[in-house]
Amino acid sequence: MLGKTFKGLTDEMLAWQTRRFLEIELARDNYTVYLRPEVVAEVAFNDIQASPQYPGGLALRFARVKRYRDDKTAAEADTFATIQTIYQQRPASGRLLSHALRRPGPAHPSGAESDPPRPACTVSRPA
Image (cartoon, rainbow, N blue to C red):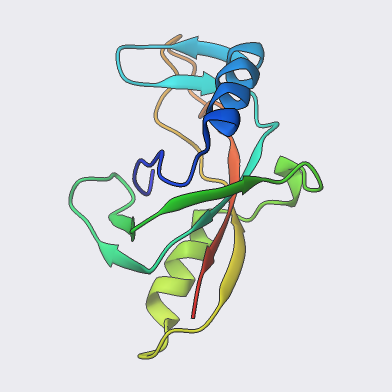
């Protein structure tokens, strides 16, 4: 996880997201809803920073949902390694970054050893 945001969502997008996520829900616990990896969201952000709050050690700064990408599948998304690479190689001055992201989530509440599928997302940083 790289952070949490509902910024950028219109009421229409939030209503669609709620309906769609309920359709593809696999399981849930007190804090997490586990989904089949069928949704790609484009998320804009201003920077990536080190963060002790998240298991991956990174967080997106000023993240906001731009849109859902029905033209992309979860299989087209990159892994968390993409964000790590962007973080390690980010330029001193901003430039547009547009990448897809999919990172396995925490252990599944069913006790399954493999990570549950998570929604993918496309991330972009404005100049």
